[in-house]
Length: 167
Image (cartoon, rainbow, N blue to C red; front, side, top):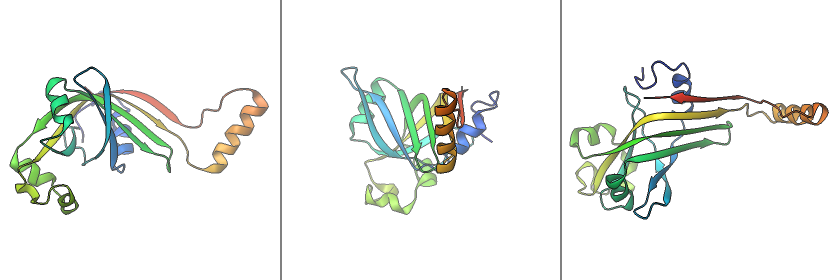
């Protein structure tokens, strides 16, 4: 059970929506104040609801996070019409035990020396807020929504949307 958002009934749904989405766009703040996004392979959320990512020590995002730890994560799965945004504080983690715990062999493509690679680190994101949009993925449901909008003049409400307090 995730501890973040334990008072928000939508927190469990948010975590459930992102558990199978393996790529998140991580946005950080560059030194000149502009935003910088890049795709990151998402690890499973831990028991506290923190989100984890492997990274290279010598990367711009490490400098950006060291200077301003506010980040945003955007998850998208167009096949299931699932979209999630999570904002929070990022922390750089170099703990060898944690790296070994999160390690999987496909990561060797980026870290050839495995968990002993001197460039390996983790980014832990402590979520503060989230929002999700969860729509039915059926083409028939979308066609029905379109037809209903044409007939009634009202926008369809094809799925769930909620803001979630994760702090």
